[in-house]
Image 1 (cartoon, helix red, strand yellow):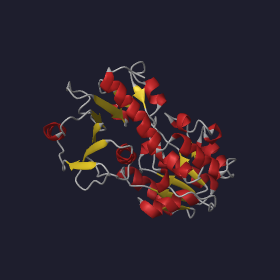
Image 2: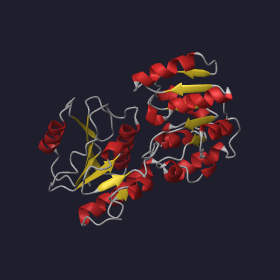
Image 3: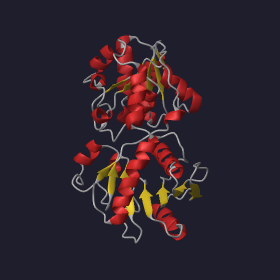
Image 4: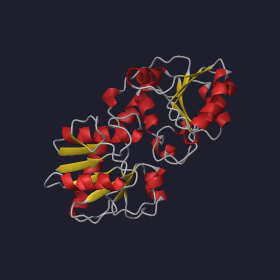
Length: 320
């Protein structure tokens, strides 16, 4: 199959965010399965697929025009990952699937929408005619450890949606050593929380982390805190943590209960619940957490599921 993936025009693949990492993992898995894959993405992107860079085209129409002008011959399907779902709204001769990765894409009218969780599909106006495919990671990229150090971790964007302010509440409540890692997307919020971090000897901010530094933080943490304040589409960092053998204390918003369906005891109703949880050891062995991810959330499983969607759409457009 000849497959074209179109990534957003924000950061090059593989990127640090969940969306870019998903496009990267999916493209590589499809190549490994023997398909001919082309990825339209920012210059500087990496992939085992053929990367066609579109540069910093901030006008979305110019991205769309460039892809349609240069698309490989005999392309079987276009997989649109852009925030504005540029292609899913077009009436093209090439079949198109559109993955809804973000909240602002939820109500964009597209012909073949794919959600990243069953929860979001059921909540959508497309619940009777859409698809869902769980995100997947490259399990080999995540080092597992059963040996944990005495700290909890918050790993995510510094903004209200990800609930960093609640993570700080929990840290102040418990006195447990807490590491905050992530890019300061919301400058005003960061200015608000920085004095609290500086005045708390048990809280440390280490900025944005990648590669080995991120791996070390994830696999040695006693808990990952995921106090999300939004209706999560999926929550990729939860499966990254569990792949490393690290349990997740999380608020049950959006797709979080679905992703953690194997471990409902990790769901917290309040900051006080989360504080109580992280002060205890998890009741689950780290190896069980990794096996859970291996059985449900790998890039191979994601690619297999997307291929079924592609085949349905290419065939007759019937829904699963």
